Length: 546
Image (cartoon, rainbow, N blue to C red; front, side, top):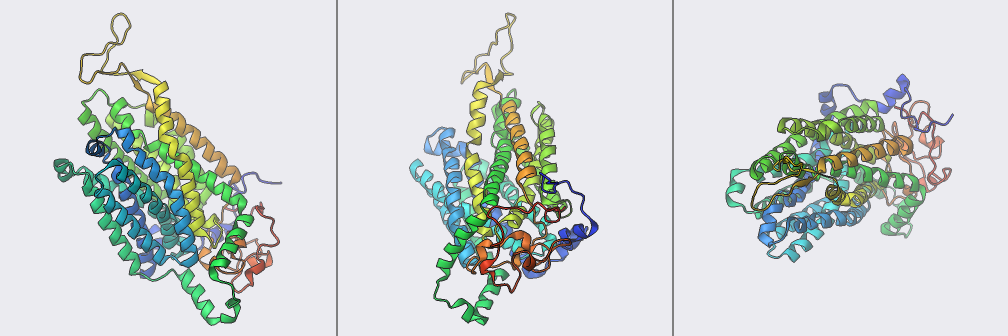
């Protein structure tokens, strides 16, 4: 009988649990203790790159009011730069991901970090709104490459058993970057000077530091091993075909072989990016302009910033916990659980009218949202075509981000059509809302961003539950670091499930990779995967066991 959930809720045998856990102990400190010094440094280089990327990105959203004053523009015009940054990220993921899978992890990431450092510095020197938009568009290209390269660098050099926990730590580098930037932005120094350029100057210096950290470390073992094999077996590689040509051939093979999982990856990341945007983009505005509208504007704004910081603390906690338990519960099942609980918590997120209630709602909703996100780095690395992990994972992420970039506009338009009474405007004896005199004049109604955001978040949760449950697969425990590089003949046809349990080993109940048309170290991989149909998935319970 075919399982439409691909084994999502199957109870695994003891042997299957052992194979899928990849030797992971239950003690999280023992998991971290499995890493040697070099693996720890490689992970740190990926983590700090992603953290600094977040700092540079949020420097705009944290300074919207100051930027509007500096360029004499409306805040909505300033946020156009954020939209442009998001739209250009897909191009960056394509460019830098391809360069990384072709040439290696080290120097593409170093170059990428140097580019965003220069563009962050350049943002601080902009004196016109046109120049500001142009620089932020270019920044989007640079930013688009960071996530795929950071995830590949941080996780492929780490022990397979520790990758779930490390995935949660890595992804929440984004929330940590926001917290750092927000803390500086709320400092007395920034309040006193009101100089929006400071955040960009600091971001440029920190991105340069991240580039120097990565430059001081060696290339990933995956590419060092490939280089060594070429040097030891020159007769197998000197066939007159350039590595770039072979890369392009294998890229086409990858698209033909992995078209279904590629579509799934884009649909998955579209949902995930809507999940984060719908729960974050208008939340400060909802608190400041709707929920706490009865307070003075400055006080409401400060409370909104505090609630956002509390929410990001929940995000970090959720990411760590979800990433850790995904090593035992499974990647997909962990995502399903956290997304389901997120949907259940929506009323607690939008109904309170006190700061404590709103802050608690923000903490727990972000605990669930970013908990599900904490699984994404390792999940994408494990389901992506083995030889194209930086390109495939980064591009799926950023294409989903591009589709979801209209989230704020959707919520804003919805708020224009669903409105509630302004708490500063009482209802008179005749039943008419009457606003006291004020400068500027008060509106009798306000956009009901809470209801709109709640509806959108609920729809997104339902969408993700369907996509992950019925379209997703899982290769938990894949030793993707043992797969071929993208310039190896036949690399585009290699499947990640052939690397679960280790090359040539196979998980319990599943033949070794070499016995089922898959990749095994030492195989002639030119014809790997020929026995499979493009897009076909084996629905056997063993391959999708939890």
